[in-house]
Amino acid sequence: MPRTNDTKAKMVASAALLLREEGIARTGFRDVVEHSGTPRGSIAHHFPDGKRQMVGEAVRFAGGLASDPMRRKAATPEEAIANVQETIRLWITVARVDGSTEPETEALAAHTR
Image (cartoon, rainbow, N blue to C red; front, side):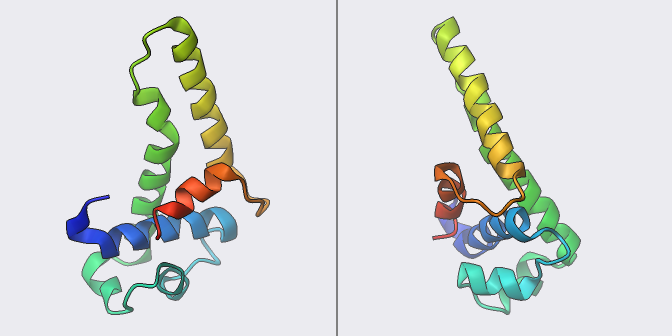
């Protein structure tokens, strides 16, 4: 995450995690601010278009995180297969809505710290 915009990065990562756990209807700016530990005044600055903008950025962030293994160059066919398998596992984790936590969720949560 870029250092110049840590507040927004924390908010986006927190929103992604909360959206995964709570869904869109139950995730609001208040929840994101509390979870990320960022100032409430940052909302209007970083998301002038409101919740729709925050959700869009959170979904793009989570999708990018989940598809990261596919962007790695594989040296062998086995590495290529492993990258695809990891991508599938991460997408399943990002899409899971049962509230369970796994190491992959911790990777997503680490971006909020």
